[in-house]
Image 1 (cartoon, rainbow, N blue to C red):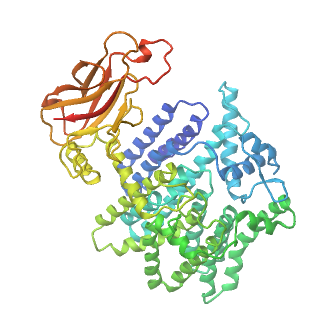
Image 2: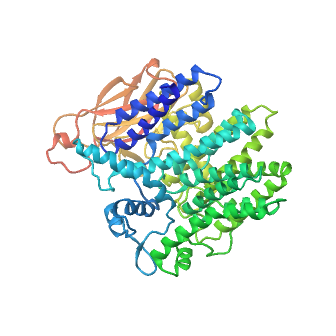
Length: 634
C-alpha cells in the first residue's frame, strides 16, 4: 500500500469514527484516527516526489478538514428534517408516506395546504443521502449483532450524523475540485488563498459544520461539477461534454430549484456560438428534463395535478417585487454586506469580461437573474439565514472571479492579500458566533454596521482574555491596549485604583467573576453581596508595585450561627492574610508585596471561614457573608 492509499484509508476510517462516536464509540478512538491521518499526510508531503498530488497547500486543506470534522453537528434540525424524512422513508419504508418519519424524529409534521403530511423540498438531497444511510444501517446492524447498544431504526444519532458528515464531505470535495481548477489557471498560491477564503470567510463554513443538514454543501459540489464541465465543454463542440454539463445541471436543479438559473450560463454561451448550437443545446437540456420529470412525478404523487401552484407557495417564489438592492446590501443578511469577500469576486468578473466578453456576459446575466429570483421570494432575506445562503450555489463562479482578482495582484506582494483574507476569515467566524448567540438581535433581523462593529470588537476582547495564559505577555498587553485599554491605574480608561462594586465600568467583563449576587443600592451606596464560600475579581495591572488593598465591606451574616467569621484575601494564588469581620461598614486592609502582582490580569479571591448555610441547617436565605462597597488599591 502506498502512502497516499494509506492516507485515503485513514481518512475514511476517521470519517467512520466521527459517525460511530454518535453510536457509542469512545471519542478518543476518533481523535487518534484524526491524528494518525494528519501525521500520514504530513509524512507524505515531506517525502515529496515529482508526480505526487499532495503538496504543502493541499496538506493545509486536509489538516483544516480534519480539524473541522469533529465540530460537524450531529443532529438533524430545521429544514433538514424535511429532507431527512424523505430519505429515511425511501430507504426504510420504500414509500413517501412521511407521517411516521416525522414522529420517529420527534418533529411536528409539515402539512400541505390540503392538510396532507408532506415535505416542501426537492428530492435531490434525500437521494444523495441514501448511500450514506444505507452504509450506516449495515454497519449499525452488524454492530448491534456484536453486542453494541445502537438503535437500527433509522432515527438514532448515528444515522443523523452520517448524513451531516456526508454534507461536509461534499463541500470539502467541491473545494478540492475548485483548488485544482484554479491551480491550473493561476498557480497554487492563488488557488490556495481563494479556496481557503471561500471556505472560511463565507457562509459555506457555517453550513458545512453548524447546519450541515441543509442542502447547501451538496449544492456547492454539484454547482462546482456543473461549472467545471461547462467551462470544459465551451472550449469545443463535443456533444457528450454538453450532455455531461446538462446532467450536472439537472442534478443541481433537483437539489435546489433556484439553482436552475445556473443553466442560463451555458444557454447564453451557446446562443452566441457560431456552429452546432441546436445539437449542443439539445444535449445540454437532456439532463434537466429527466431530473425535472422525476421531481414532477414525485410532486404529482404528493399534491396531484395542481402541484405547480403548491410548489410555488411552499418555495415562496415570486411572492413579491424583486428587492435586488436590499438583497445585495441590506443589513438583513445582504449578500455583500454580510460577505464582503464576494465584492472581490464581482470585480474579478469584470476582468473576466475584458478578456472573454461572452463568458463575462453569461456570468453577469446569470448572476443578475439569480439576484432577481432570490430577491422576489417572500423572505428574500432568508428568514434565519446566516448571510445569503441561497447564493451558495454560486461559490464556484465566485471562485472564478476571486481567482482573477487575486491574479490581478500577482505582480504585487501577496502578503497584504493574505492578511486581508485572514481578517475576513476572522470577521466571518466571529459573525457566525454573534449570529448564533444572538448577541445583537434575533437571527432573522437586520444587524447595522455600528452594532456589528461593537459586537465584533467585544467578541475579540473576550477571545483575547481567554488567550491570556498562552499568549506572549508583550503581545497580549499591546492587543489589550488597543481593544479596551482598561487598567487599574494607567491607560486611557483607568479605574483610578479603585473597583466600585455594583458600579463597575460597562463592558469590562473579567472584573467581577463568580461568587457574587447582582448589584444592589441602599441609601445611595452601590454594592454586591458575596455568594457562597468564594468570590472572584480580576484586576488588570500594567505596572506592578507594592500595594495595600483596602476592602470596604459589611458583615451580612451577623447573628446567623456562632463565632466570628474571617475573610481571607489571595492574589494570584498567594495568601495576603485574613481579617475578622465586624458589624457595620468597615475597612479591612491587606498588604500585597510587589512580586505578588504581575503585568496583565491578576486574580483576587475572597474566601470566608463560614457561611450561613454552613452554620444553620436548613438555611434558605441568600448564602451571603458580606456586602462589598469598593476595593481600593493604594
